[in-house]
Length: 77
Image (cartoon, rainbow, N blue to C red; front, side, top):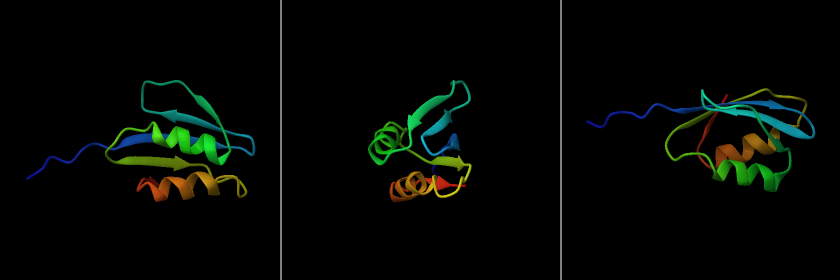
């Protein structure tokens, strides 16, 4: 029986211009432009294995992030 991996936890505060991201327990906030290419670059840097992303839904500014994250198989809350 395989031992399940603990998920990599990410919190995202969404605004029109930026995503303020805390990825992992021992990291500082990282601001990423809220633009499709910047979001894709950031998502590509996440570790393999289960990733859980908690997103503050703000207006519709979170839609690009959650769409791309779901396409990569990440759980979004």
